[in-house]
Image 1 (cartoon, each protein chain N blue to C red):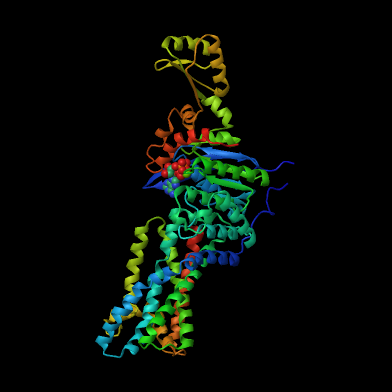
Image 2 (cartoon, rainbow over the protein chains, first blue to last red):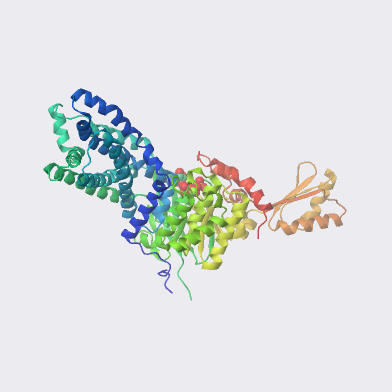
Length: 261
Length: 348
Ligand SMILES: Nc1ncnc2c1ncn2[C@@H]1O[C@H](COP(=O)(O)OP(=O)(O)OP(=O)(O)O)[C@@H](O)[C@H]1O
Ligand SMILES: [Mg+2]
């Protein structure tokens, strides 16, 4: 008898595995949806304290300021929320459950892609909450722009989340290194995206960096979409930036997961 | 019908480089395991047990050497290996953010079980491993032993032909341990599962394993049945106490006629000897002493521990061997009280 146990062996297919990983990752979110709302405190603080300052300094009406500011806040949620998800994986690597999933008959790519796809859920829920909160203050909602805007945000989040997971896989049990790199990157990226303050007044070098910062492109595209300007070239560039980031993120992430041990 | 061994390891070696120094975690590990066997891997902290298991379960590539597990090469066909094994790691298998039952269902899905089959099996395991009160709690909120029970439940969700368990009983109370073993034995009877586990407890290996491999400093230093290891290398420690030292002195000669092991005076009025098969020797000695008119006040028989076998093999105690391993100290401390608990536990 050949020792190969074809009868008991589990056939692994990337799609089914990804679906199973995604479902598992969504469980804590569904069980405890309030964690999503609690993590909105930071963007709400920005909305509540920063927007009035912008109104004051620009002298424009609240609605108009929000129309400019809210899309940036949405991208910021992704930057801070999804940009940090690698720490969850890092925790699982240290406590042992990552090891368990590595021994399971799951394709390596599914362990990364399933996790990255899960990010769509918190992004969409949190973005909708922010939009609904801004609405009574004069923020205008254009339904098609909102839908496409959320989709763009989700694609951006998949890329950023994958990169965050890759960072966790690369830094292994060195939490300080993960956070060190993450914080070092996130704040310059935040400021150089024109998310909180317009960069038009900034020095030339800042504007030059912003041009190559994909997050800047996403922010600009989101502003166009939320203004209902769907056909703008800026929107196209936003998609190019987000898709490129997602492609790079997934590629790097899957590679890191394959090497994970 | 002959079948190829379920595990065949050839010169598996793993070296780590830590701060420019090379750590020989596993050196030249060569062995075979037959289908259906229950093998226990014993050794002190840092011996290389987990590293060996990690290589065999495809978690980490060996520095050199090869192995076939369930007929597949660990390096060339890792996916095929993974689909035919189960593994309970030394750390916590459940994700801290997940709920207990959710993790079990996810595990079932990972191993290709249908939703219905996963539910049935999960509820069965929740029931039998006493996890029911915590089924909807998150893993983070479980005690150490409860987490360990979940780890085991996760490892038992599917019925793989080969199951690896890395210190499954560490941190479990006697009741849970008996439970764990019942599950392992059931798996073997129902599915003919081959079980390969690591432990620090010789009693456990003794009671259940057909074969014990002792590892030290990355090398296998003994590979035999528990009974033979104990009788060749250590033995039960028998102590007989008397009312007077004169009785004790007289007793030495009487007991010596029953065994070829050395009988010695110990302390004030007692004699001790270390002998295999002490369980049978002890009543025989008491009867012989009675017949000789020497009244035994107290008689104890302590089965050998891993420490004794290890001492005989290496001339070091486990505690000494474990030095330089700052973490995991508690595991050594566990050995003694747990051994006592195991003896008194009501088990089959
Ligand atoms: N990832 C690693 N990097 C560097 N050294 C390691 C690594 N993993 C294990 N080692 C070293 O390899 C040796 C064997 O470790 P291993 O974990 O296999 O021991 P063990 O027998 O399982 O011990 P324990 O009973 O404490 O679980 C130890 O000296 C350990 O410090
Ligand atoms: Mg270990």
